[in-house]
Length: 325
Image (cartoon, rainbow, N blue to C red):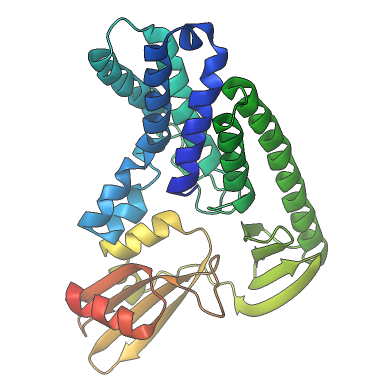
């Protein structure tokens, strides 16, 4: 989810914690838990600082180690120790448990969007991306804001946020049901499909989809039960080709391939070398595929420059490649 939604989720957990007598019985503990819940709800995304280094590190590692199983326990422990130092004589077990819930909920909700996370690393390195909830879901965010306002104007925090979470559980169940209906419809149209990738949008009735069969890739939109096809590409696994093999040694393309589950690739012969381009098909926007990886090489297949990330026009891409040279 986006940063704003994680913040309001942290506030909601801090409010829910007032149902715990160990929390509600002490103003100091109430404050400590609220801080722990808000910080815990943000902690797994501290790997965003990798953007400062380069896109390849960010793409390869974001939602990786910081969202992994060990991190579920490391983050609340570090936050609890810091809060215990600043606010001594608070029940550490209760503080740790509520902070743990904030961390775990952050990781849990991240698996429901199309970006996903390595939730079960280091035991399983596979990205888990269910494609059920948009990375920013207006209903989830607004529901939290409404609950916070109700609390602000007099309702009991614990019961208010408990009611909020009950509503959200039913909302997630409904979105999962809707996604399964979309998937079921596509499997009827494509009984030979090996993979179906769904990406939710801001509109409940509209989904971006990619259907992969053994021979073709279909990029489409499902809107109110109607399937609209945009493009169809031949499905061609990455070949054992000298130019491709040389390009795959590049860190940017390697990062792209570690993250993207469905893409198309191209090799272009240039005047003085080659260009290899990979395009992720899940994020089609206004007829454009913004998430790409591109590698430029000379005649001897030596890498000259490369880039991976989100690009929305060719001028920006050219500047990125010039900087990388």
